[in-house]
Image (cartoon, rainbow, N blue to C red):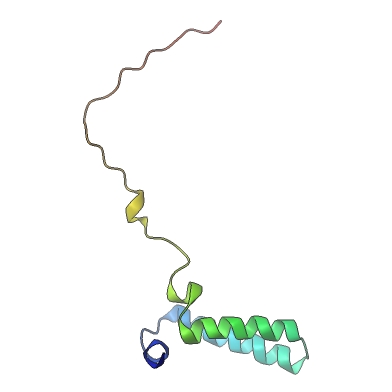
Amino acid sequence: MRERILNNWTINRFFYLIIGLFIAISSGMNNEWLGLIFGLYFASMGLFSFGCAAGNCYSAQQNSKRTFTSNETDNVEYEELR
């Protein structure tokens, strides 16, 4: 757990931590408890590197590349509609 907190800091993690703390502190000062929970959630995402702060919100594009096994084209038959 200690290595997860201390290592692999990125701009996104830092952003999540700072914005989350800002939301949590300002919500706590205004007695808005739902905002406090919301802010603490985002701050913990940045601190503990889970969710979007860890880069897990999107998948890699390498699986979307198509590979063709044959260079032949298929013959397409068209039918006339009236």
